[in-house]
Image (cartoon, rainbow, N blue to C red; front, side, top):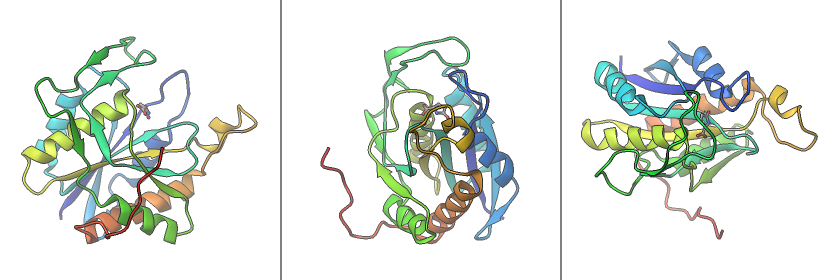
Length: 214
Ligand code: PCA
């Protein structure tokens, strides 16, 4: 059976949970549209992560690789369109390293576009009644690093398409504040399943405008 590689992250920045880890734990082994999901939870650490992704892709040869990560403060499932070849860490990673102004992969392209149909995926998620949006930046921390590394691998491994989805906080995380958005795990799970089924069924984005003015 063809494989989808779904990656998530351990908690970081002093938090005790990460919605991406919870989702990967639930979906690991599940079958979506005839594809078996292989889940991998990554440490929030710059060093060694691109190499770990190369190993996972080489081992499982997935048709699709989708990275998931937490983006506290966002209110919708965010489909990332652009990965930049830049590391600029505002906080230390879980190994205590805070690299800045260096490339994810030296000598590689300045940026990669996702090879997943993000506009179609946003539509598929919102049709389920779940908020979703396009995003033009995955930041410059470990999530962008993973997105860039997966997008780079998609240029090297035949048939691999790669992308990244940022997730809102879980309600328990947002409850530390009075005014921050969150999304329940069950809703995120339904959205990720819908997005993956859409990505499998869809090769090209619909021809519709969807950018941002700022
Ligand atoms: N979010 C961070 C890193 C790990 C995660 O879940 C990010 O957006 O870079």
